[in-house]
Length: 165
Image 1 (cartoon, rainbow, N blue to C red):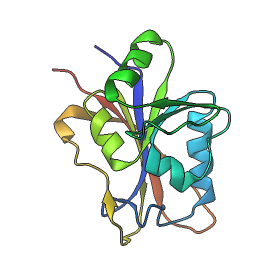
Image 2 (image 1 turned 90 degrees about the vertical axis):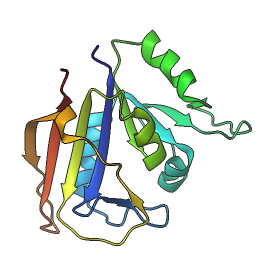
Image 3 (image 1 turned 45 degrees about the vertical axis):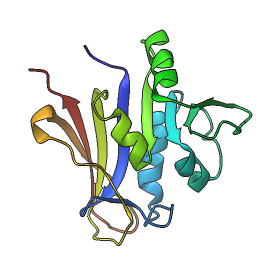
Image 4 (image 1 turned 180 degrees about the horizontal axis):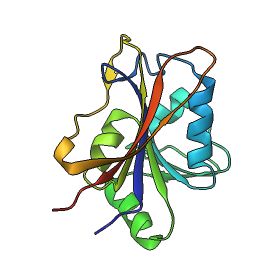
């Protein structure tokens, strides 16, 4: 069964997606691509990643996944379990949900995602958070786009679709 979940991530060549709860690079053109893809859709984000961004992302429905039962965020949907979010996904099959991190949230949704959008940033960087391993047998590359940027860092945005056997 196809799902309405897409994982979207930017990662370095060595799989790094974060260091000290921040992205270890700042590439405005890659962020702009992320914004264009996710705007007017739902995003699912873990509490620590939300805190690293520092705000709710505008023009999107923000679902924050946290075990913190005391967290209240005006303008966001605070969810405390994978099951709670599953109810939303099932109730809104026509809507797109983008999982934007962090690692634990990616791991939770990796078996459910229909699509992966991975911006591969051609840098080797130090980090303390890595994107989970994916089984290449489960994914088919369907599209690649180059993200031109002022820093001239090679970035390839790769779109993968789940393969069903």
